[in-house]
Length: 264
Ligand SMILES: [Zn+2]
Image 1 (tube, helix red, strand yellow):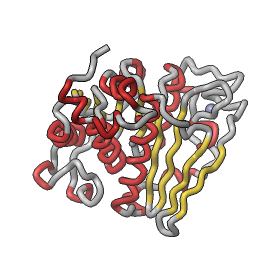
Image 2: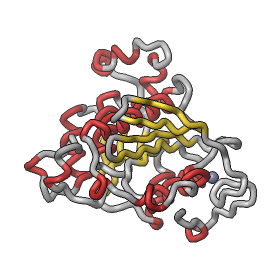
Image 3: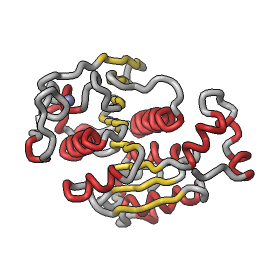
Image 4: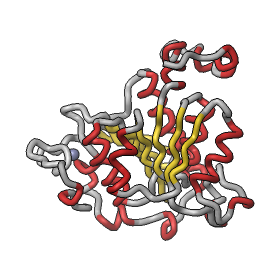
């Protein structure tokens, strides 16, 4: 267990002051290893707050390169980074934000061959991806490893956030994602559009949940889906039920193979 230096005690003072974080929580953050999958709008917002808040090690995963159309909402990337891998671009900005934090860059998309080992090497995973295949892969892999997963999504003026802890009576992503129509979940920001700060709100809330889990503060947003309606200024939490016949986490689930999980 690495202890906080005097310089870090000063740097994180406003956070250590919080009773539910305290020295123990801040020390836990310094020793935490967090996997961020996707360095688009959600990943940029979440990763910047995890970095400045003092998470010790962040692994950044993205196979995509920075495009001019990303700059409207992906705040870690700049004009000079167009064409650069997004995970590498994010690392360059994050290193400036907090030199105490260590970064590893995985300049590839997450796939079945790499997911298990990557998740196993981390204490917590943030799903900041924009596609259903990655969401399902992370859900199954984190379930198998019992690694907490903080999931976020954003489109148009809307967002959603939830947490999976893999407790006996709590649902997984697959438990409820099958009730969304494929049209709903298959839509991307490319077709539907997204308002810049909506990804910031969702990514920031993912960072809040991640920091709570790592410091054991408060009550995690599990078994609930927080729905953000930016257009009407409404936040609402929807209760999520575990599906006992879920192929991932249900009573008869056989989760020894990725191929058994169908996309909804
Ligand atoms: Zn399930």
